[in-house]
Amino acid sequence: MSDVQKLTIDGKNYVLLSEDDYEDLVDGLQASAIMARIAAGEETWPLDLVKELFETDSRVRTFREYRKISTAALAEAADISEQDLSDIESNTTTGSVDVLTRIATALNVDLDDLVVERDAHQ
Image (cartoon, rainbow, N blue to C red; front, side, top):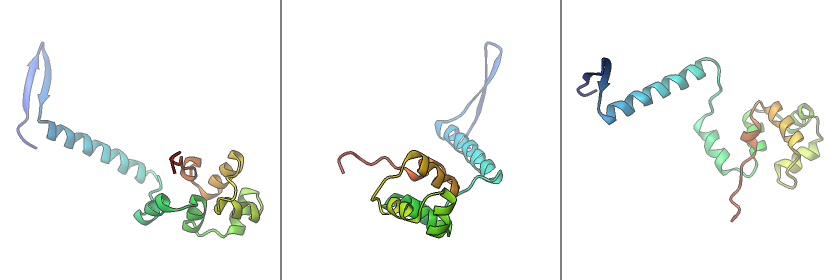
């Protein structure tokens, strides 16, 4: 951290620091908040999984394989047939919001983690 100046204006104390030092301070606070969430049990995902989620044609399958859950076990946990799950994983059908919510719950992920908005021009 470079030089910090202390100022008093209208009886209030202020600290003047460079923009770089301010950004470093904010980054440190944000990192501390993230580390606190992790320490409290928030799940983190390995980089390989994150990359796969951007490239996959089926986030349901990617999460199922990451969680090491068989198709049969996930279908049972989501209360759907294996064929319905297979159709969702192969993008033959999208599945209703209710079904996708049950799948997300069974995979212990947010519904938003399963559903990706595609570019309309693709």
